[in-house]
Length: 217
Image (cartoon, rainbow, N blue to C red; front, side):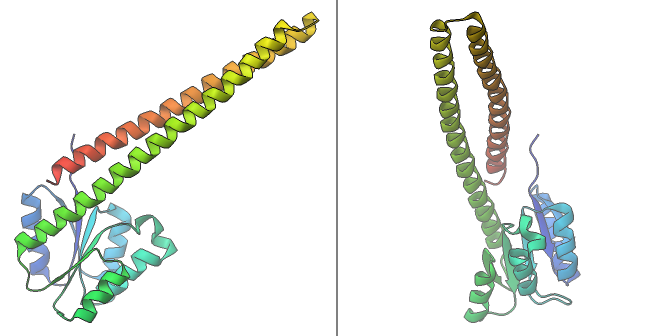
């Protein structure tokens, strides 16, 4: 089952909220709405959007203030990498630069062309998904290296135990060494189970990232 990309649209003008709701929903996105900056922050915690479309000029909290809180506040640390497209009627370069420096991924001046907005939405989502896929690959490489390292360590320990058993001069010593070898085997088995779970988790994550990439093309 392919999960729809969840987009939060934040604007104090109801007509804009309804427009994006209708247009993006038709294209297969899961659209959520907020009418001001404070409501946006509360909604982000609840629905964990994949992307936020954020108007700049709003009551209570401006788009700039929302972006700054989302990107820098410890309370929102787990949402700090949520991509943001900021909208504004202000077409001043200084305003655009400020928005981007605060952490917005894109800045679009009103009035806008929906086809352009959609293209930018898809570009940002694809970029995030590709970054996620690269991170997933790096994790799998690290996991593979760690697996080899752990196996080499246990094999060395077992080899040494068997050599010591062969050279043991008493039954008691041999039993002690055999117990050590058995413990090494148990440790290897436990580590194997742990690595299997981690590998399966990364494989599932990679599969979900691949599905998500296909849905945003």
